[in-house]
Structures are given as structure tokens and as C-alpha cells.
Length: 336
Image (cartoon, rainbow, N blue to C red; front, side):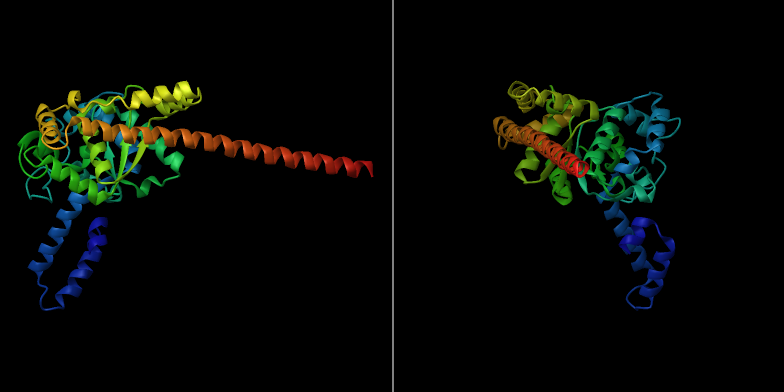
């Protein structure tokens, strides 16, 4: 039943229903309730595929709706959810989570672009469309990842924005416990992808939500993968190539963390997250834990860079040795 519902395979569901109805305990009402429960859970656990984020379909939709070449996701918030003409995407569809009108964006995607989340994306809506797409492309190219198999818990897509932006109530709204909801999702997914806009004074480290997400990942011992857009990645590599001076500059920039002055788009969110921090571990502890993670990231980048140099040098030596041996052998053959 699970796979049939994920795929939207009506024929398979019909066969399953017939098989179950042969059992006296499974009547039409029970089957319908079971399907509804699975649809609700899958909606809550679904992520958007990286394949869709990189698709021309999504890029064209974002540009057409926003009337901008490279909109950020605040622009898309208005264009996707608050628009009257055309109507908001999913505003006319029943939400499988609460049975009310207006569903999450992930619920209207083609079935192939939504499955159970594999990664939790830590990012900010201030990022532009091109920045997000460039980061995703660099990530899958460098890691040799199939974008069809990566599904992101990306709040813009997976949260029901009609409840958050318009109703201000219900599951996933600002009235819910942010700490509990966020922690549950992160633990369930089990792997975070942190999308940084740049290594030099990144906007990522000026936002209270992303700082808190990093802290939570550390405390829950969640694996974190850091990604950058291609241009920022190239800039980072150039800085590391400068040696100690460049590495120290990268470290100092990424360790410039101050949760107490970080901001959020929604003041209510900012107050609530900061209250959670100040009432528990305190800002200094959050800053220290995030700085530890940033230092570990810098160390990994330097290690990978040096490792790449060693591997490249080794290959060059092998090629050089092979050519020398071949030339030497050829000379001997010619002499004979």
C-alpha cells in the first residue's frame, strides 16, 4: 500500500483493496481510512526531489509567477501562495494532513518528485533561485549523486504555507512548538545539508534559524553536509590555496557567529527561537557549538584539498614514470 500511494498507482490500490476485502475485517470504510492515514503521513514526511529543483519546469514556473529573472524565495512566497491571479498553488486542493482547503507545495508535485525525505535542508528564503540551483548542481556533480534519489525537507515546499502565512494556526504554524516540530523532523530525516551562500560573511550565519539548526544538529549528532554555489566554492578554493593566511581568513569568517544578534524574517520566530536559547543553554553555548562545527568544516576542506594535491601529484608521477620507462625501452629496442 505504501508504494502504491507514493506512486499514485490507482490500479495497484484497487487490487490491494480487493485482496483485503476478502478478509472479513477489511470493509470499504476501513480501507478508505487506512489509505487516508497513509496519505496524511506521507504528506508530512515527503520531500522535494533535487531533480525537480534543477528542472527547467521549476525555473520557468518561478520566473513566470514572480516575473523576475532570478527571484529569491521571499519573492516566490508571494507569487506562489499569496497571489490572487493566478490563484496560489495548491490553494484549491484539499490538504491530506488536516482535510482543509489549501495544501503544501510538495502535495501538488508530480509523484516522481516527492518521496520520503532523505536530507534536511538548512537554508534561508533570502537565497535566490539561481543560488539554490547552482549549489544543488555543484553538490550532485562533486558527490556523483543521482538527483532523482535525493528528497529534501525544504520548508518552502514541505510546510503548508497556507496554514503558516494565512491561517496562523494548525499543525506547522507559528503557534506550534518550533523546537519540537523542528527536532522531530531533523531526527526523522537524520542527515542535514547546510546550504551556505558564501564563506566570506555568509548570510547563513546571520539568521537565527540556521544558527539554531546547526546547533541542534551538533547536539543530536546529526551528520551535516555543507554545500556552496559554484562561484562561492571556487572563491573558497582560491582562498585555501593562499596557505595559512587564506585558511585563517576562512576560519575567522565562518566562526563569526553571534546568535544573540541574528535575525529572522518573522519577528515572532526570532523572539521564540531566542527565548528557547536564552531559557536553556544560552547564546554563548550555541555560538561555541556552531563555531566548533565550522572549524571542523574548514579542517575537512583543507584536508580534502591537500589530499587532492597528493593524489594529483601521485598520478603525475606515475604517468611520468610510465613514459620514462616506455621511452627507455624504445631506445633500447632502437639500439638493438
